[in-house]
Image 1 (cartoon, one colour):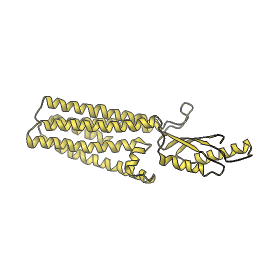
Image 2 (cartoon, helix red, strand yellow):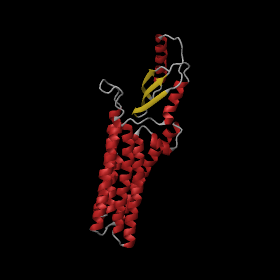
Image 3 (tube, rainbow, N blue to C red):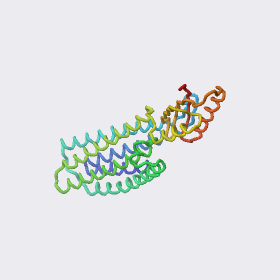
Image 4 (cartoon, rainbow, N blue to C red):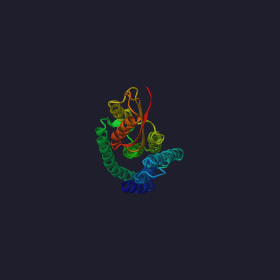
Length: 290
């Protein structure tokens, strides 16, 4: 957050000195990133509260809500305003001054953004390795949007810096002011694309979409391997927070002549075994006749 704020201030100063539309787009991008870091931090803090009578499954979904707001911030502040600045510059082209100041600021910003991107990528790679997933699979399936949001933001930031640099250099070489405006519009389109990806991810988690198959299958297998459970067996799981599952199990007992008390005891034991997994917040087991 502090790094993004410093980068945003440097880009704003460079944008004022150069008058570059691409630099203004990058400044807006960094302002949006700074705001998003604040939103993600709020979500992280709020999501750590434990269950209470009003939220029996805890506050883990707070993280999804604040990540969704961060996606809106990228869309509105970073995307639409960057496109608007680019269109304005196309309609009323202005010469870019002190271009080397802008190029220098962008190169320094690239260093900071590259370090942040490397850190987020390293975290995601560790998480994906634990889940036996590829990076791409983990970006799609991860239950915690925070690291994913930072990684995609930083990826967009590095591409945006490259676009802004291209706009400034092409403007300096050709003298055609439209290159700078085109760079600003391209940055805006890039940010809107990232915002849509992040919003879709948060929306799916907020609406309690089913957990990925590689998360559900081990639970299903554990239930099916229980000696008193017959076929069919249905296991549904949704995330109620990062790495926090609500699991519903529908089983058919493969037992004859067992008392209700003995069956209840077996069900309770299965629930306790499943809930011993730290990633499972709560388990409901429903017994049905074959």
